[in-house]
Length: 246
Image 1 (cartoon, rainbow, N blue to C red):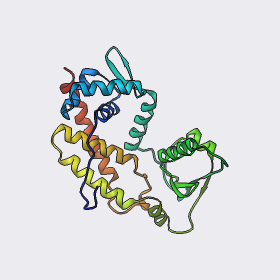
Image 2 (cartoon, rainbow, N blue to C red):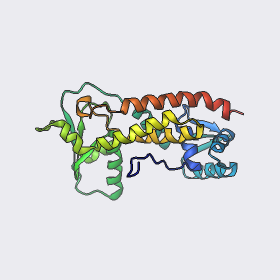
Image 3 (tube, one colour):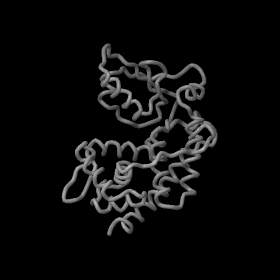
Image 4 (cartoon, one colour):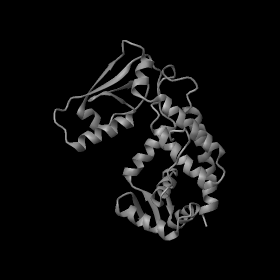
């Protein structure tokens, strides 16, 4: 979204087309010819898609067997995160917050980056350097890196929890972008346009803090964006065999 409130989407590269296609499939695998035909929707030449496939295999993103490409374990974990973002597991919230405080004295840059990624996956926000928190309304196992580097506590703010949530997350900004994406997904007619918007919508859902309703602004668009993405995915699954199967 730019300063005028207009939705701006980055064009999909050949690699993005391949990844977005496979991440939306269960199991996440397709023959090269099908991926080439999906790429053609975006005006991407066959040779460009095949070069991208070769480079993705070399980079450890894909595995190839008998002309079929599938996601590696690392990207299967990303697919699981995306699936969870569409249907997050929640529990009734009684007002408690989970709080993580970094307890490791010395950490390498890679360790700090790994923790930051883990906290993003857990949908925790950083109150200050080394202190992360969120309402305890999600059901999610903690990655080893989060358990190793942090001490974990349960507590509750003395002030208004909705005000704290608004400090920790840009809720209004997320909602504005979600509404723009939802409208674009509803209005797009061409398969390539819907595909591009859907990929952006799925990335945006990964950043949804999934807060309890009473901490959210009115008319929170998270559920509606998920509904519209689900409608796209149903269409995509019906369309892909017809378009890419030959």
